[in-house]
Length: 297
Image (cartoon, rainbow, N blue to C red):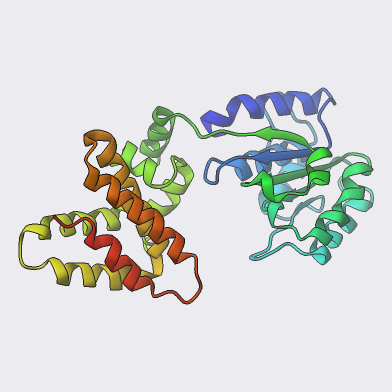
C-alpha cells in the first residue's frame, strides 16, 4: 500500500474484519494519489476467504481468482466518457444475486463523478438497500460533480496529497532519480501522475517542456527568439493548456521569489490565455506564441 494511504487502509481493513464497515465508501481527492489502488486493494481483502488485519491471505481460491483477473464477485464499471444508466444497471444486476464464491460482492466505480443524472438515480436504491455482503466503492476527483443524494448515502473518505518528502521518496524508489519539488509542482504534487508521465515515452512531459523552455530563455539574448517561439508553439499546440499552466507556474515562482512587476504580468497573461484556450476552435498555436513571447527579455 502507498505509504501515505497506509493509515486509512489499515483502519478500513480492521473495520471490515470487525464487521463495522459501511457498505458504500466514497474515496475523493486529487487525481494521482492512489485512490483507485486503495479501493482495489481493499476489494481484494473483502473477497479473500480468510483476510487478516494485514490484508488478504493471497493463498485461498478467491485470492487466486482475483489475481487471475476473473473473480465472479468483483466488478469494475469504467467508461471513457460519461457513465450511463445502462452501465449502472448492468453493475447492479451483477450485485443482486448470491455471491458465487459465498463471500462478499464488490463493485468499484472509478469515475463516479462521470455518472449521468439517470445513472446516479439508478444507483440510489442499491446504495439505500444493498443485498447482503455487498460493497460499493466509489472514486471521485471532484465531489462537486456528484449528486447530493449520492453523497448522503456514502461514507466519505477525503484523501489528501502526500507531503513532499513522501512523494520524492516514492518516486526515487520507482527509479525516477531526478524527482524534485519543481517536478512535483508541475503535476499538481501528485506522485502517481509524475510516475505515469515520466514512464511514458509518448506523452508530453514536464521534462520536455523544461528543456524547451530553458532553450527559449537562452535564445532571448541572441537572434533566434522569434523562430524559437514559433517552433515551440507549433510543436506544443496539442498540449497548449498544460504548457500554459506550466508557464503560469514559472511566472508565479519568479514573482514569489523576486516580486518583479514583469513576472506578475506574465502570470496574468497566462491566466487570460488559459481562459481563451477554453473556447472551441481557438488557434492554440497563436495563443502559445503570445504566452511564450512574454518570457523573452
